[in-house]
Length: 424
Image (cartoon, rainbow, N blue to C red):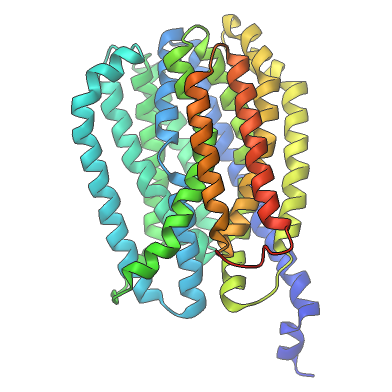
């Protein structure tokens, strides 16, 4: 038997694949923790800015979270992985540049819309300086570009640059935020959002440069209809997941303004658990896509699911045990009691979302799109229920946990049912 045959045999390939998975996931874990810690350190500014401004910052941050970053990243990761597996790099280049122009055009439309809704939004969220909204619009542009180029890197499995972008996003956000808020004494939500823009812009610059071998290629024509048939389920499906993660904060800021800054602080800590298991999905997804396109078998999904469950459980236990200490360290004394009371509910609500995100990534990576309609129906039901039922912070979190569990149940049913191998 030749050396090449031995290297490519399933017995040898499986350990090699696992080793690569752990190496890449480990690096992204380190980058995610480092970048996340730097981003979280921004919330220490809550000690030096008024409570009202910190609540405004939380609402503006939630507005940026509603940018479909996860769907955009996964779409381009899927398209890149599939194009590399089938030799369609030039078609990918043409598709990407068209999408880049389209996203930028939509942002310009959103800028015009903001001119008309600016006053009502400022009144709803108690914003006194319109500059906060316009800086947020720049953040939205950078955050819309960033996942597109991250998707290219993810699809190419260039996780070194991907990880550095995560770290430098945190570095830019904290360094520039500290310069504006502390050194220049501009202690408002606007100052923190300037730092957020700097972080996103720096990360986007790294990703744009590192992926230039793809998007600068000479383009070839591609089928728009076939592309939309692949892209729309990904955008809608991952968009439903992202909506379930972000909508609660905006409802709280609009309808439960008292102690909303405490809700923002608890949410920041709890959502860190979702970002913590994100590297597993990031590494798994392009491998699932490539295996599906090539008709190969892979055990990456089972490994990712096991690790995600373990990390999520450790994360929620850590937040329950250490969360109150972290809150006392990062927040004003007036935040501590209410934030500590909310934290166990918020952390518990994030566990099913972590698992549901992974299951959804596996299904959509394999092109099993039948799960998308139930996910959308669930997201709409959540939106309607949340608009009608939001009397207390605890009640909002109970709804969040319930709908996240339902999302997990839907994704699990489509994943493990006997007929789940049929693509939608």
